[in-house]
Image (cartoon, rainbow, N blue to C red; front, side, top):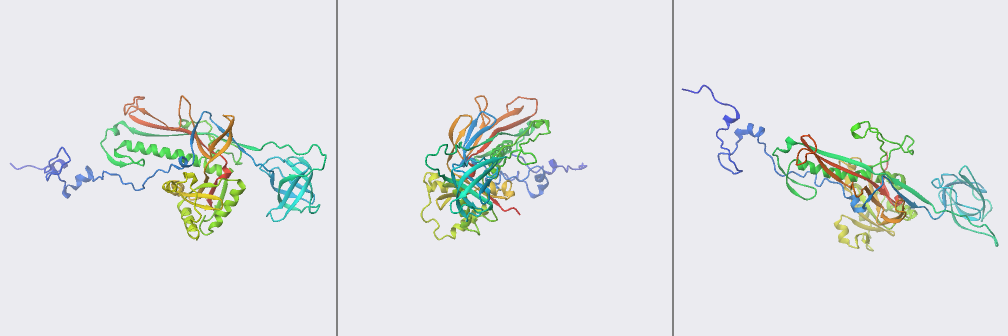
Length: 482
């Protein structure tokens, strides 16, 4: 009796194949092009090894290279920085017999010049210079008026904008009540840590799937992972964001740009009603307290003039001699081209003191050094400024010049002077809880039974802030805004 019909489903169509319990090659378990529909639906061709199309994707490492991480118990860190030793004011207004010091001529500091002082008066461009003796001082509404007599001629030059500094004093014999008592000048700064959180979630059902892929991680390890692969990427992404937040964080201000304000989340799950103040990151600190150098193409067309301009400013700030340059690719190449044009490139030797005088160590870390004047610079590319998903997407910052070494400041919590790296991270920690980098698992999957949720949640948390001490020793390189 002839068959009334035939099977056309996948089972009938593949009746010529014999499945094998092992991954072994036989002539009767080979899928041919005739079985294309089956392979497209059920057995796609999968390369086991994951292609590293972006290379090492992590951008962290900058703070580990130039700073340190230290615990703190309070929710605010406060430090004091020394003020200038000598008295100088810019700008001031002069008449034939007076020097008028506005309240903001020295960043809001009060006048410390008294009668008997001898001063240097210079025009705005510094080319017209004369000396004068201070006869008397009157202060009203924060404005100090110095009555002066010039040494070369009694009347001094009239300037709508001038600058002055004290170089000494002169008194007659037998005088009393001489000199002006000046308290040590200092500035106090503070920063507050921010709480960073993230998590990775996978359902219990998905953890049972067999879908292994051979991977190589940024840490150099390799193996077969599936849902842990995503958890690992969530972890390194969070670690990157810990550093990125220390670079990009900004304090919240009101419309006037100076009065502290607050951001209040409206979502109750994210602390609705709680006031967030932000934090002072590297770029924010350098914009307000550091040196900002703007140029259309740093280190290229202008040649060494760019560096000479920066060196002159560093001299004014009393900066240390060893500095590290973290640059984007275009700026790094521009400096390479600039140095290549110098016939004496490399002549006289370059100090590798910051690398224990080891040239190999400096080069292994990606640094190349050169000397200009009395300053040593160690240059390296900064991946954060090149990556297309971070600052490489923006392009306004060309690099940062970071001083190598430590600064001495007065710690309000310890009540004494301490030495700290110019750039360092403080994280909340105590004997009960270390919040440098916390990780914990909740749910009902993976051996943890903390809730009835059929999932595994891997949580990440950190509470930290960045301390940028002596920001006047840093230089932020920015492109000209158009």
